[in-house]
Length: 386
Image (tube, rainbow, N blue to C red; front, side):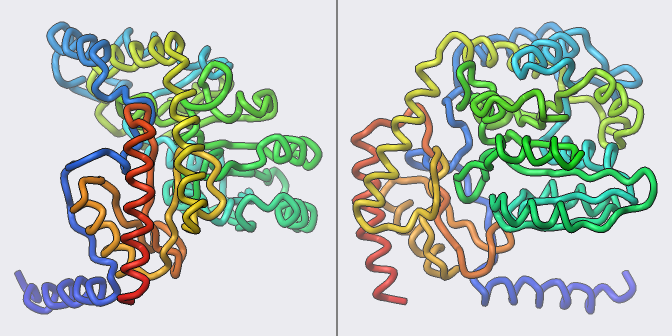
C-alpha cells in the first residue's frame, strides 16, 4: 500500500505518546472480586435471565437478520418496549443496540442546527458526540451548577426563528458518582421553555420507589421530554431504551439513522430484558442492598482520608490525580484480588485520574472493609513512590 510505512510510523508514534503519558490502554478480562463492572444488581448471571434468553434463542434464533424496518422486527421486542415505557411512566419506548447509539439517535434526530444545547461539562462522550453531529450550538455549564446553568440560559442570545433550547444531562454521573439536581433543572426548563433530556444509564434499576431511576426518585417525570436508559448496567443485559411521548418514538423510527441503518439486536434479548424487569419489580432488596453497601464503603474510605470527590452513589471514584499513580494502584489492588481499573483522560478531566469503583449487590460488608484497608495501604505507598 503506498505510503504504508510512513502511515504505520505515524500511528506507532501516537501510541508511544500515549505510553509516555500513562494513557495507553489494554484489554483485560475479568479476574478477582468485581469492583469495576456496571452490573449493579448482579443480574447478568441471574438464573431467570439466562434461562429466558436461552429458551428464546432456541425459539427465535441468534440473529434478527435485518433492520427492524425490514425483516428484523419481532413482536417480543415491541412488547418489552411497551413494558419498559410503563416502567418509566412514559407513553412509549424504542430499543437501541447500545446506549451510545441511543444518545446519538436522540440528539441527531430532535436537535437541529439552529438550536442551542446546554450540556453539563461532565456529560458522557455519547452525549458530546451526539450534540456535535447535530450541528447545534453547544453551551457547556459547570458540573451540576444550577446557578451557572440559569445564567447561561437567561443570557443566551435569541436563535433564528424556530430555534429550540435543550438541556441535556446525565442523572447519575458515570465517573463522579454524583446526581444532577433534576428537580431544579425541571423547574428552570419550565420557566425558560427549554426541552429536558435525561440520560439515566447509571440510575435506572437502582433508584426510585420502583427502581425506574432518578427521574422517579425526584418526581420530575412530567417535565422530562425524553429519557435514555441503558440495559447493560443494572438491568444486566445490553442495549438501551429511549422513552417519551409516542409521537417522539415515531419520529425516531422515521429519522434516527443508527436505528434505521443498523441490523436489529438479537431477538432473544427481549426475553432477557423482560425477565430483568420482573426481577427488579419483585426483588427490591437488591437495590436497597446496593445503596446500603455503597454508603458503607464511602464511609470507610472517607474515614481513611481517601478522596472520593462528591460521590453519593454506588459509583465511587478514588481520585489520585496522576495517570501513572492510578495505573500502579489499580495493578496493586488487582494483585490482592480486587478487580478495579484505572480511569484516565479523556474519560475524566486531566489531572483527575482515578480508580472507578462500582458497588454491586453480590458483594458484602467484609469484602468492602478489606478493600478499603487495601486502598489505604496501596495509595499511601504510591503517593510515597511518586
